[in-house]
Image 1 (cartoon, protein in one colour):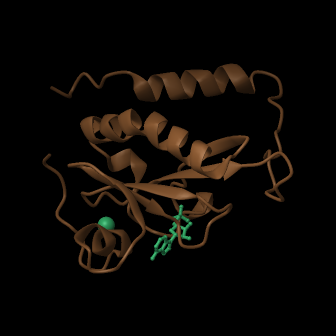
Image 2 (cartoon, protein in one colour):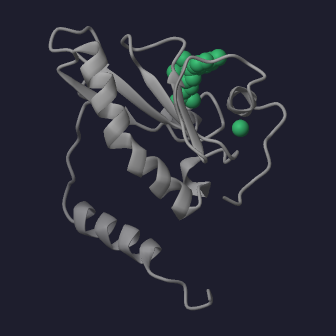
Length: 149
Ligand code: AMP
Ligand code: ZN
């Protein structure tokens, strides 16, 4: 699959190349999955496209689709291997969201009814017409740009 070159200073590119060891559980032509070295819960897996794209928003659709296609199998394996009661699949995108490695990746985090992980996040409320306005703004961003091919 075409894509960006590997970034020499990137930790996950080094893991993809095998320059840094990892506990790999799955490798496909375009992605690898390995154990997070500092797991939220044991069995925490990272799914990493082989090509270097710093953020999710830069991923080609085919590559994002490929990772999506292997997630159910990986999640089943994590849940079966850990005996987890459930799991979270999350992506941290940008430092504001807690991303520390600038090579887009998915977290699969096994969860247990009695685990100490702080979840769910706090939820807020829309006031007045904020909800409708927000829907409009996101919908507008999703509309095809007439200047694009
Ligand atoms: P994020 O904070 O979403 O960018 O996730 C980066 C993750 O990479 C963290 O959960 C780290 O624990 C994990 N991590 C950092 N270095 C390594 C490594 N050498 N092998 C495996 N996982 C790592
Ligand atoms: Zn990289």
